[in-house]
Length: 262
Image (cartoon, rainbow, N blue to C red; front, side, top):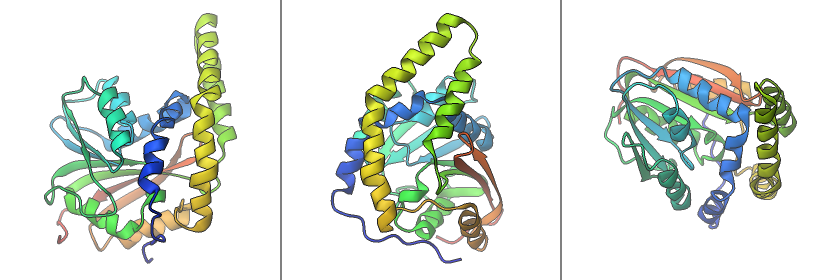
């Protein structure tokens, strides 16, 4: 399978993601999204001393989430190409000494030596990349032999309704009337404020770019074909599952024992 190459990015692309950073964190209030972060965390199978690359960290949601878990001693390099996203991430994760944030564009060469990382995670970034093959080759280059990579991506027929249904179902399982009421109030508050801005940007910018072919969310067959096409470049085994109320793919891949050429 040939890699997917998008049309050239429009000049305002960086400014859009800087704007989106103001509203992006509303998704963190959704329990299915936090379940996605948990599934990615579990799939990484972190061990003491491993070094992790978060490729396209956004506002640092993954780092913030796992900081609340009993994770082993690790180091995380979290990169993004949006300065505004990184500013929010640094502020959110200011008390995490094991996390280093830096600016990097996943559409180009990454600022790391070969075989630097034991694990790589990339949460909902694939659809916006210009050239999947080029980025995958870079990720494999900086991943150590036998290292693990976790990629998540929204389904092409992504629906917001199942997320809200799952979120409300999980609220229903919260113990205590007051805690349930507080969760419902927090949900309504987020939806009425930052949720509106996020939804508008998704509809009028991201969806439009998908229609124009600039962005592309793969179906299962396309994602499987993409991973299989990189077996010759270093992918050893892979698996594709579902998460986030079955609205997201979660793919796990391992790198072969023998490293690939730079």
